Length: 350
Figure 1 (cartoon, rainbow, N blue to C red):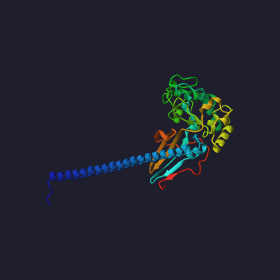
Figure 2 (tube, helix red, strand yellow):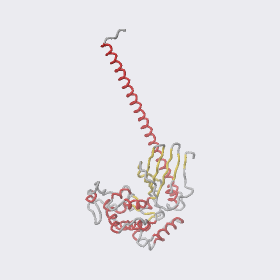
Figure 3 (cartoon, rainbow, N blue to C red):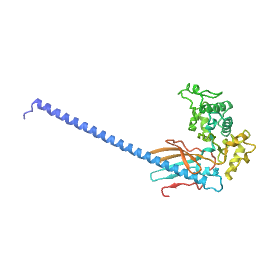
Figure 4 (tube, one colour):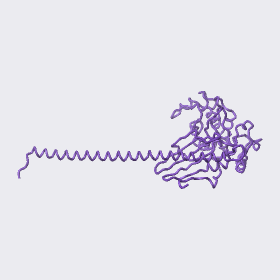
C-alpha cells in the first residue's frame, strides 16, 4: 500500500491538533460560562435573601413599636408610666418564626441608662452635675463588678476625656484629651468634637480599656439632646449602678430596694428619693421613657443579618430615629429581672 506524501501527512497532523485545540477552547469556555452562571445565581440568591432579611427586620421593628405603644398608651390615668415590668417583658426578648427563617430580638429602655451626651449642654458647655454623676457611675459599676477596679484618677481621666470628645473646642481640659493625644497613637485618629452617636465610640476615649467598656456598656446610652434639655433617667427602669449615680449617699442596698419597690409599684414622684438623691439631680429624673433600642438578629438559611433601631415615642406613636443593619452584637440588658411568662410572640401560623 502506498504511503501518502509527507506533505499530506503533515496536513493531517495539523488538522488533528486544530480539532483538539478547538475542543479544548470550547470546553474551557463552557466551564467558564457554567461557573459564571453558578456565581450569578448564588449572588442573586444572596441578594434576595438579604432583602428578605431586611424585610423581616422591618417587621420586627413594627412589632417592637406595637409592644411599646401597648405598654405606654393603654394605661389608666393621665400620665404614662413606663415601668420595670414593661421593660422586663420587652427587654426579655421576643422571637417569631416565618416560613424560611426567624427573627430574635429585644427592646430595652434607653432612658434607664446614663446618656453620655448629657455631659455637655446644647451650648457646648460642660454640665458639672452630670460629670459628677458619671464619676459616681464609674465607682458604682466598680462596686457591683468585683473584678473591675476603677481608681479615682482613671475615673477622672475618663470623665474629662469623654467631655472633651463632645465639646466643640480642641483644647483639652485637665486630665482630658483632644487631637494631640489621639493623633500620637497607633493608629492615629481625632476626637469627634461632636455628640456620641454610639456607645461604642466611648472605647476610643482616653482611659477606657476593653474591660472598663464591657462593664460600662449596659448602663450607657448615646441619645440626642433635644430642645437644649438633658435626657432624663427613668427611675422605674434604671439598674442599681445608674440609681447609685444619682447621689453620693446612695448605697447598693438603697438602690436595690428601689428596684424591688418599683417592680411592685412604679414611682410617680420624687418623695422616696428625698435625702438620698443629690438635690440638683431631681430635674434629671423621670418616671416614663421616650427612647428605646431594638437589637435583633435575622436568620434565613445561610444568611445572617443584625439590626439595631433607635425608637422614639413622641406621645402619639413610636417612630424610628436610627436604623442600622449588620449590627450583630447580642441583646444586652442591664436589668436583672426575668421576662414575663406571658411575653408575646408571633409566628406565621398566627
